[in-house]
Image 1 (cartoon, rainbow, N blue to C red):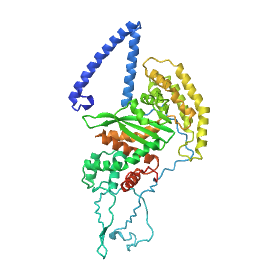
Image 2 (image 1 turned 90 degrees about the vertical axis):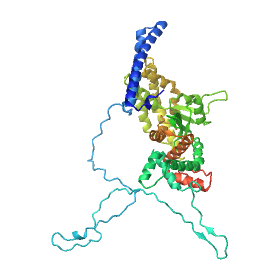
Image 3 (image 1 turned 60 degrees about the horizontal axis):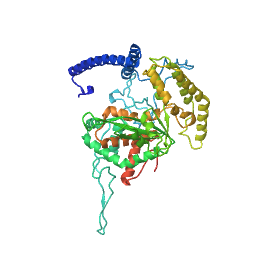
Image 4 (image 1 turned 120 degrees about the vertical axis):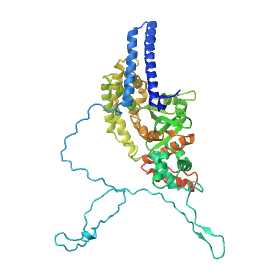
Length: 503
């Protein structure tokens, strides 16, 4: 059966839409009959039950339309007015560019113009006097065919000649340099430029290269970086706190593609992605392994399945849940239930308290205990009472079954124990936004190159996204890091080099 998103002909699409509309009307009538019959058998008011069902469908339709066509921001109300300026604004001025190379250009007068307009005598240069300005310009990138000539040496006694050592090669006998492969990797996984698009761009700049050749460089570079990528997982698991999330990823080897999933675990300064064919609880268990710290997640049930206690003993990990996801549920329900405004205000108070707390991870070992103690004390004194008011408010609410308001209430209360972990553990943030930010590059890449063409493609993508994002988190330029790590592995196979590390 042809899927709607695969249709390209307008007339065919119109016919399909007409058929779907007719089928929707038929199903609507059938729903009315089934709801009435079900209510009659249960002794309920058929009209009231049907009204509940229709209200639920209207809510679902409104939410779907908002997600498709509405603004994505979850900000509420009007922005507060800015306070009046006490001093007049003097302008921002040009942005400093300390990283740019400076090119001095001296512009002389043409020979014919070197005549004084008043007396007619000749003009001569006033040494050291110029009128200056700055321009930011662009010098087009150029590819260079580097011919490496290795000098040979011989001794006067007729011994075996000696040749200067060859430079490290990404691929034995290969024509493309390590620097070139790193550039291609950054363009694809750091700036979301598919290989076919890179091929066209490079042709414009004078380099004739096939997309398959570009892929070969990525594959070889990833092989050298494999051990460093694997070491990231052990690095992540040393943290007392993990963020975890997942998103879909297409494997494009057959037809329109097969839906796989990109799983991500992140500590405050390390990110590890892997792309797997399943989104099950067993997969979540494999992703988390035997990690025994706190895992901050959304409400997806696979994580709860993965961390259940079993016959082999208690679950090693403790789940904490994300307040941003809870807030999102009530924000969506607000258009149908104005009572949500109250709980959104209370959540805003919790977030305002968090905004004033000191960070802890970037501090030195000597300063961390004081910051963590302060975080715990403020949360116990100020956040805990507000969180308790949220729970009391939720228990006092009444909502129609199946409504967005009811689903938001049930979602929050079901996850309550995990939502309150942050009150007793100062290292735990109140939301999972950190890992969502680290997945943003994968989502942007997915929109540009749609997914991966092979299983090996998923492995290479996960590797480069992990290493690039970890380098950014740790303050190291990703290009410099990839080149440094790959060079170390080429010279000594199996060498592990982590971002911002001298290992």
